Image 1 (cartoon, rainbow, N blue to C red):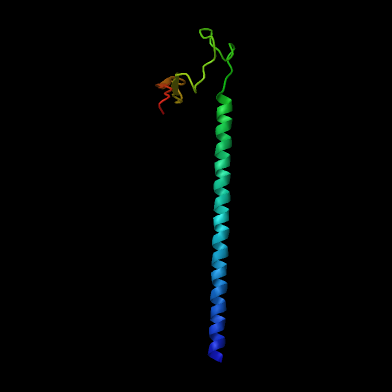
Image 2 (spheres, rainbow, N blue to C red):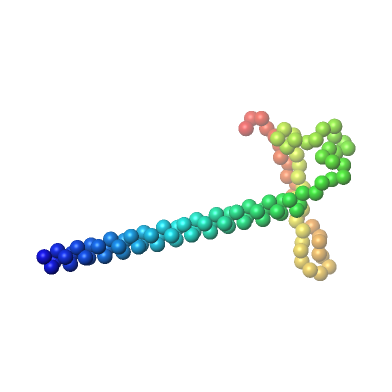
Length: 110
């Protein structure tokens, strides 16, 4: 009888320990998911803020003087010039150190 009681106590301790480990793992996974969600939310907010700060409205509006209608990137081919800016201090401050011209061609075969 003493053996059965001892065995029963061991099983109860083992179950309690297993429950504690599972509860700890669930808590850690929850904290990790919350941290990842917060990090992604922050990155999205900062990206949106950056994009909003770089959007400059032109005095001429959305249509060039050489065009009759605005360019629609979903339909029209467009070219974009990406300029890198050298941010070293000294005499070369503000000089473009890289230029990439990218043309995005619309194809209906896609």
